[in-house]
Amino acid sequence: MSDTPGLGTPSMETPSMETPSMETPSMGTVYLVGAGPGDPELLTLKAHRLLRQCDALVYDSLVPKALLDLVPADCERHFVGKRRGHHSVPQPSTNAVLLELAGRRRCIVRLKGGDPFLFGRGGEEAAHLAARGVPVQVVPGVTAGIAAPAYAGIPVTHRRAGSSVTFVTGHEEIDKGRPGVDWRALARATDGLVIYMGLHNLRRIAEELLAGGLHADTPAAVIQQGTVQGQRELVAPLAQLADRVETAGFASPSIVVVGAVVALRVPSCAPEPANVEMPIPF
Image 1 (cartoon, rainbow, N blue to C red):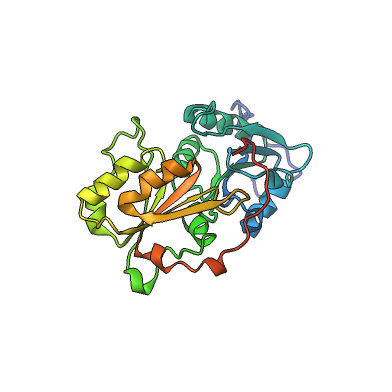
Image 2 (image 1 turned 30 degrees about the horizontal axis):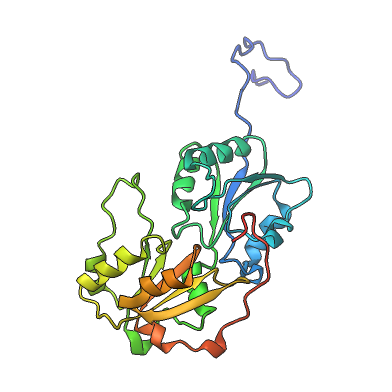
């Protein structure tokens, strides 16, 4: 007979004195979801599904109420919006909220206007969470830099207008830790520019682009509140754009487009802006 204890034979080995496992409970998943540019019908199917099933929602100021109404009634909500002229939640505080929710919720949706990875700080939040062991997934959204011009009939690319387009932020923050935008270099390097958050610095931006070689008559446009009710647009030569915008009283949020594509706009193809309500009214 074998000396190896069988299933019914008691073992004479000394019982293990190891400490029982104290594994940390699994973390919830944070989804960095693009809400699109404002029109609720531009929301992706994946984003819609996640909103319908999430148990925590962290959202921005450019997210329409129609999307907030999709979440379950018992969903925990946190507003962390940022808008010029209004109280803004600092990014470290938003990071802390996401980390804390991941410890006690299963499906956390971080809902951002536009696309999370295009001037949406989604990359910062993803890195912060991943470094702390939190599962995180990005869900791309329709960006305002494409949708707002489209709702004004402006294509951001066109074969008759060149082969390149550059998406750039006009809002330079002092904590970026890198050099600011070289507008003069961009004037020579690309066929078209789509500028996010550029209204506040529009005069300086236009002056730098002209100094970099763009012609004074270069077509340019500003689209305010793109894709939603209240949208309006202004088309003018680059050299006159800042004056015309100030006279007309344009305000943020606005997208600026510079380049020959503006002259190729087809107004009749522009969709009707959506009637929506925002957390912070425009």
